[in-house]
Image 1 (tube, rainbow, N blue to C red):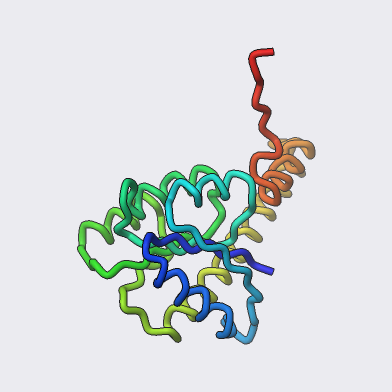
Image 2 (image 1 turned 180 degrees about the horizontal axis):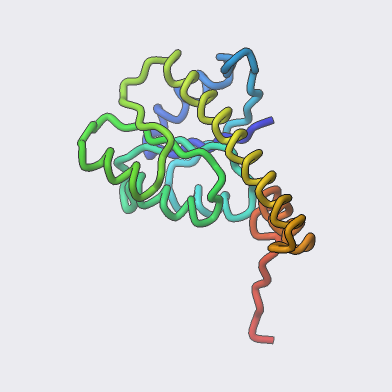
Length: 175
């Protein structure tokens, strides 16, 4: 099951996206991606969730109060670099698109109002692309272990961190 995070300051948009993703099968290249959707109305709530829960894909609005979509996705990328990132926006500003691609390294920029088929198809394609990238990373890490450039313990730490973000970090208190 793939976990998708939706972030938008408009409650109606979140409800519409959740409904669409709940009833529409997410299929790409003959493979159906079963998804679980988590919705957040602020970037800060979403970032806090991402610090403790693995997310496969995040779909964020571009214009939100206090933190725009690019700033949010840049912070999100620091927490979970292997998650696919998409931006949904009614403001197709060229500078916004360039910033999203260069700074947050998004997979796709989707315009509002969206076409349901194209949105679901884009999500499925992003999940398929993410799977290929993860497989590439795992094969490269196994080769590093075989060559002695990485220890088996470090490989296991990376695997655990992917499954449970924050599990390998220690927060030392004053005592």
